[in-house]
Amino acid sequence: MTALDTRPLPAHPTLRRAAPALLGYAAVRVLGLLALAVWSAARDKDAYKLLTARWDSLWYARVAELGYGYEVRLPNGDVHSNLAFFPLLPWLERLLASVTPMSYADAGFAISAVASLAAAWGVFAVTDHVYGRRAGVCAVLLWAVLPVGIVQSMAYSESLFTALAAWSLYAVLTGRWLTAGTLALLAGLTRPVGLAVVAAVWAAAIASSTPGRRRVLGMLIAPLGAAGYVLWVGHRTGKGPLGYLDVQAGWRNGFDGGAAFARFVADKFTSFPSALAGVGLIVGVGLVIWLYVTCVRQRQPLPLLVYAGVVTALALCASSYFGSKPRLLLPAFPLLLPLALALARLRTSRSVLVTGVVAVASAVYGAFWLNGSGPP
Image 1: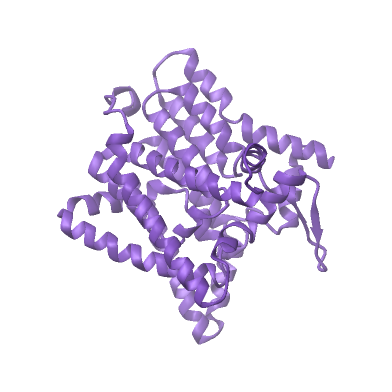
Image 2: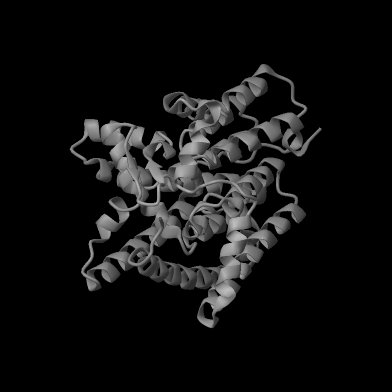
């Protein structure tokens, strides 16, 4: 028997039960948007454009409007193809724009707003199931106040993916295998890291001793989204099953075990000012690894460990743009559970004070970041 087989079902994560977490989450997001609006106005920039019409949001909107097939050829020979972007978010943008007066950018923003609340609810549901309601509220607030939390309000796919991943993990933890597999399928249509959700479903299903066709069917359904899109890209490019890797290579994205990232960090130590950034990167990576080790020591359920481990490995060991790594780690919410437990043990007044201070700092940083280099 495994922990998944013997754990009793918790109270159902109703909206009423999750209300404190969702209200706190909404307050943090509103604070972040207000800080962004003020900062952008001071710099004579359009805050809404920063959220909906820059970087990846433009690529998603173009897919929604024109479909796949667009690419940009750079002077150095790199080819940036929109086939690198998984289809669920642009599908939803096209659907919403077709039934409302919204533009594709507006639709992307609206979808992210709704998905971020669904993600917060999912984070609460998972944490509530494992550690209780108070820890669940703290986990949601910690996810909201992450330094790159402003991405949750952008027309990006992080919020949509996290919502699908969190609820798939909750379905696994509560033995709802068909739901878990279906949500994993959708997560696999959202981002390449959907493989982490598939791995979590498979690991939990293999470890479970509960018999039944639903568990097997959930396992079979889970990888169909990611596999289907990757195979379709291979067919479209004429390069077979590995065609998607060639598309990513055109963006200089790949998996090298962290070698490129290590070189990037090492290069920071060639001069004194940049050496401080190098130290910060090392501390940040160390913190992420420490949090994961703590998750293992606290014996988090297997699917959470597998999911967080795969998300973390793909983020840290990929050769993608290094400024993206904090954003790529955003869906790895199980890493926050040790901190949520510690915060939940504090007196309410003290935990509110800590969360409030961090929320203000996160809002200011998000406004500064988005008006500067921002998420690529």
